[in-house]
Length: 328
Image 1 (cartoon, rainbow, N blue to C red):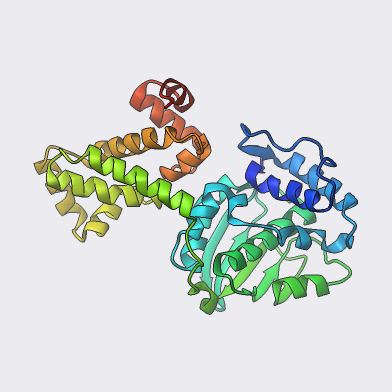
Image 2: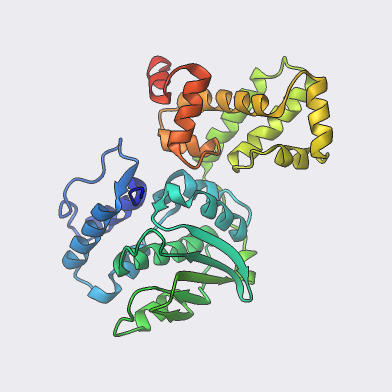
């Protein structure tokens, strides 16, 4: 079984919490800038240690910790979600890329009678109450940060045993909270799903727009239909929609018609997608602010290893090697 892990940016939340308590050095060295993930067992130990040092009520430590969550703690996933138009769209983005932040149990988002349900099973184990409560509280708090609204969870279920006092959980989540359930679950209302988000992260959006514009300039000399297709692919790649049917839908034509038009221009879909991704990858790699996991995510890869294999196939170099030889 693959090792369970969480993003280093997510772990930074805990170090910032301890710094606010005047205990910045109590947990030892934070994850190095070169670390993308932290093993779950290390995260569990850090949470346990921090809870012992926190002067507040022990039972509600995870809820206090989660109040400090910001989109940046979810890395580029958080910023990408924030760039969405509604909370529903943001949750779809988080579902697709959640393993880039919280690679423990599979998350599933599906409609339910009350609105939408986000659910985690136990296929990869039970990480414990402290890990679970921090993750779920952080997710709900993040919906509030996204919308600038006091979003309430209609229902929250945990797989762990019931604590002595439910009131801190009910106060934090704003709805029914149950323990000892078969899966971890959060239910949000349909009304909240329609809430607009408070706005995009200007720095990330400026980067995306600049890189997309650079790509369009590169294809300016290409035949007009191909330039249009590549322009459409840029937006689709960002959102992880990389199938021929996705491009056809965005162009409002049938997949069969798109295949025919591609052939008429001497192209086929997969080489066009690969070339567009390669050009975007090189543009992103020139930006030192993006780590390799973030570049992979921006290109629609859920795993950095898949991006590395693709990039090596395109260029003969690993992304890190290419970046070193193309420093600006």
